[in-house]
Amino acid sequence: MKKLRYMSVFAHIVEAGSITAAAESLQLSKSVVSQHLKVLEKELGVLLIKRSTRKHALTTAGNDFYESCKEINKITEFAWQQAQESTEVPKGVIKITAPNALMDVVIAPAIGKLLKQYPLLEPELISGDSQLDLMSDNIDLAIRVGPSKNSNIKQRRVGEFRDILCGSRALLLKNGIDNAVYIANKWQGKQIRHQFSDIDGNRVLYEATAHCRANSFYSCLALIKEGAGIGLIPDFQFNMIKPALCEVFPKLKLPINKVYALHTYERHLPLSIKICIEAIENHLTKLSVDVEH
Image 1: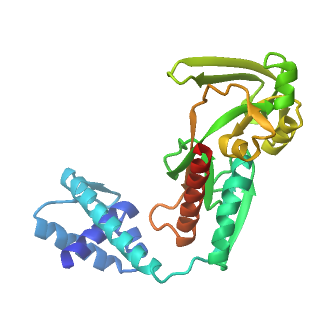
Image 2: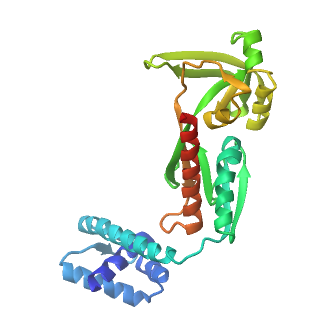
Image 3: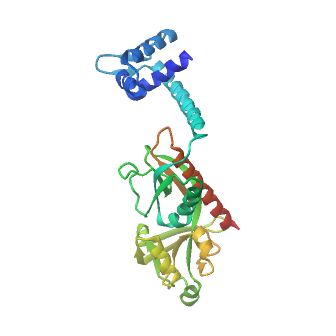
């Protein structure tokens, strides 16, 4: 047991950057932490950290040993978390942001079901197509289409969908695709390019100029349903209203869009966020099954 304790303290020293900072993090005295390191190096018979009055630096052996210590700490924390969650009740405020196209059909219904089961949860849902900063905007959970390039953000794939290029049946019968106005969301820009694939995998490029744009998915959807033009909507949305709309290219498919849950928690993910991610993933899976059938 002492070995595990020494290894855990060593990992905290490395991650905190100094013995003093590690002592504060562990709520131990500096002398106790320093003694743990000395005993560990003595028992191993190897120097782990080069120490001077100004800075500490890991030796090669210390760096290799740290990787193992880090994994042990992760396993310990995970086991601790699992045990605590067995009796913990999800509660408190949780700020969740998502694009407009996902909020009403995916996020809100999933969180609504959770509220019935866990009434102490206090979700704050923020819908919008502009991406908020998780740290500065104090966001607990962000649902986004496509992975984040920020290495400081933790992400998990929770589902997928395809966009459908569609319009009202009356519009397509009357004007045809060549004369139809393209209705675009603001993020799409003015010059539109869609790469479709047929059943054999052959690619078909569609290009258009957006003559009508809106900064809200639901504004675009209302315009499309009204017969003002054609545009993209997610397949799960199309599946709910397809008697009113039809696909522009029924034999062609657009690429799959992957949906991710993003958060900034390095280790201990709060139970409230964990169950929200699972609920959203389950609801997206159900919608995907409904689309396939």
